[in-house]
Image 1 (cartoon, rainbow, N blue to C red):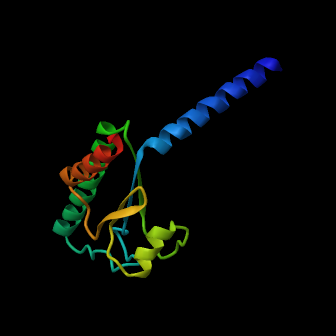
Image 2 (cartoon, one colour):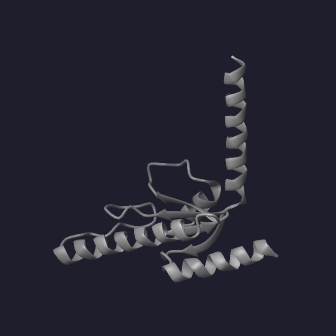
Image 3 (cartoon, helix red, strand yellow):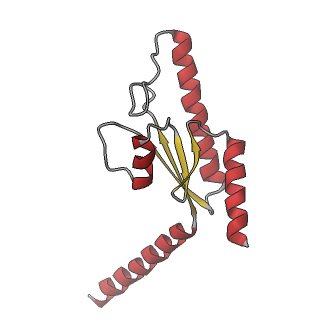
Amino acid sequence: MIEDELSYGARDKKNVWNMSMEKDKIRIEIYEGDPFGGTCCGPGPRVASFAAVEKLRRMLEERSEIVKRLSEEYRDDVTIKRDTISQKRWDYPEYVMRLMSDDKPVPYVFIDEEPVVIGKFPSYEEFVALLKARLGQEQK
């Protein structure tokens, strides 16, 4: 029994340590529209041709690659959350709901709850510039 309590206590300390490490990271949140239908902030694309389907597929792949690359290259500095905006959900953070109620176009990109890009998905280089500015502030 004592052994179980000790291992449980060690796990608790590890979890507390991991949580505090996550708090030290820059938090990027990306909220996008549904690429296959309507969203709160405008209709989704009407995909009617093979060319349109290919364009949508490439866009989604590019966005996924950007997020994956950022997650890998900045794994010690950032956490990234990516979500889809839906009219059927109202459990978004207050800062997301404010943009939704103001009918701002998606996607929304937040860094530590501050909107940094609205209506455009940043390129990898743009994300890096935003991160470097934040990382520079934290090191001062």
